[in-house]
Structures are given as C-alpha cells and as structure tokens.
Image (cartoon, rainbow, N blue to C red; front, side, top):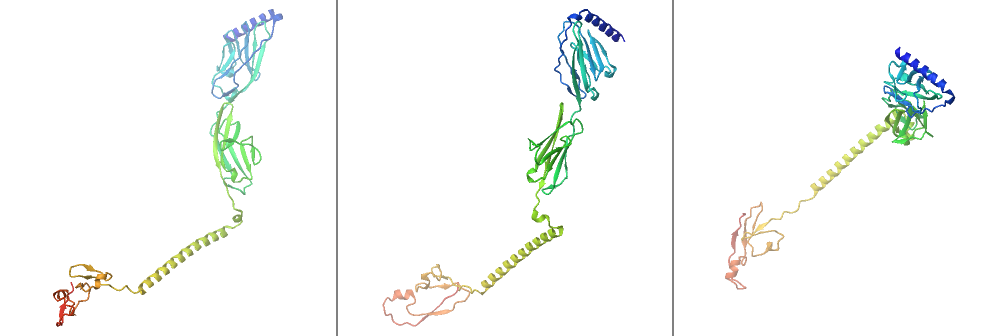
Length: 343
C-alpha cells in the first residue's frame, strides 16, 4: 500500500512537471535488443534504452494489462506476477522463473517530465524443450509394388518446425517426396530401391531442438514370381531340393561303378614273373638282370623257396681244375658231383 501511494505521488509530480514544460516537449525514442524467445523456466530479461536527462515513469503492459510501473526506483507490480517481476537499470523488465502463461504481447511506455511519451511493443514467446523425438513408418514392410510409404516424426514436447534429411543431406521436397501435417509426415510415393536409406527428422523451436533417425528398406519385387501362389512356390522349392538329391545319388553310383571296374581289371592282370636273386661264393648278391648273373666263374646259391638238389659239373666247370690243367685238351676225367645247399 505504501508503495502504491508513493507511486501515485511520483506520477502526480511527473504530470505537473510535464504540464509546466509542455510547450518544449519532444517525444523520446525507446529501443531494445533483447531476444523475445525463451525456454520455459528460465528468467526473462526485456531490456530497453532511451535518452533523457530526467527520471521517467516506465510502465510495462502485457496484453493490454499493466504489469509493472517504475519511477525513481519505486516499483508497483501487478498481482499476476506474484512477486516474480523486477526493474533493472533505467526501466528494463526482469521476470523470474518464466511459465508458458508469460507468453504474450508486451509494451513499454517511457514518460520523462517535459517530453512526450515514447513506447515500444513486441511479442514474447515461451517454449517447452524438445524431447523424445522419434520416427515411425507406415506400412512397416514396403516393396516396389507399394503405392506409398509414410515416415511420421513426433516429439513429446516443444515441437514446432520439422526438417527432413536423407543420408545426412537436406531432402528436396518434390517429385516422389511430399510433406503432410505441417511437415511432420514425409510421404514417399511409388517407392523403389533408390529410396532406401537413413532418414532423419529434426524437430526444433527457436530455443531447443532434437532429432531421430530411421532406416527405410524398400525390398525388391521380381515380376516373374510375384504372380505365383504359395503352393506353386513351395512346389518349385521341393522340386529343386529333389533334383539336388538325385544328382548326388547319381554321382555316388558312378564313382562306385568306376572303382569296381578298376578292381576287377587288377585281379585279371597276371603277376610279373618272380626273379630269384642269387648270391655268389664271395657273398655278392646278383640280380637276374645283372650280366654277371650267368657267368661260368660264379658258383651261385639261389635264394628261393625251392630246395636245390645236386647237379653234375662237367669237366672244365670247375675253375680250379682249369688252372691246374691249362691244356686246351684236358684228359677226360669222370664227372664230379657237387651239391648246392640253399643258404
């Protein structure tokens, strides 16, 4: 109450001063460089500036109703602000803990004594933060026969502007691409494989933003098989599997027959004749392929499974007799019998 009385007194003084110097009055200019977009819950600062050599009466209004009146550091506030308002500097307005209801059309008037009143109006917007952005697809499965597919973007709060991108690049909305519901829905008409890829939606307002991504897959549809029924397709699959099994069985039979034929040919082929190795008196082993195998000077013992009997040596078969009687016509001697025993 005391504040209101002091304010009324100050206003009366300012009015009297204005009447006294009214003939020299000139309007002042009020300017502001403040932002008009704020995030809910933050403090709102609406700064103004003007040039005057005297104290001015500064009055702030919202949607036509008075919020605050200030003169020489005396403040009178509207009950709607519930003590959340303050005046700083030479008349700038500060509102603490903003709410969505603080959005509206604001105006400020500056009335210094002796000058005409200057004023300024602007719109103040309070936004919720953008949260929980998501992208959904309808229908869930799409192929090249589908007439269209929709990608829908949504946010729990704060949504105002929707921007679509594909593979990180801005999407040009023309041709196959159409936006609906203020840009919230991206519709792709007559989709084909070239439309597959990552699509992202950015949801924003002047003080907050968020985005989400979804991969869109356009499956390929083969026209040659699209008209076949489920039973026909199942029959084709079964036939293909049966053909593979039959081919494997045929390969097994051919391999078996070839192996059996080779085995029979090996059984019919006669074994190579056995050649006995021989050993000389000196202990050297000779093969039948060795030219020395048949020499007269080697008394040989055959290594074979057949026991060897006696054989008759004629005159001249014994090398020692030959050296004792070197005559080319030796006298006849009775045959000698030499026994060879298998070693």
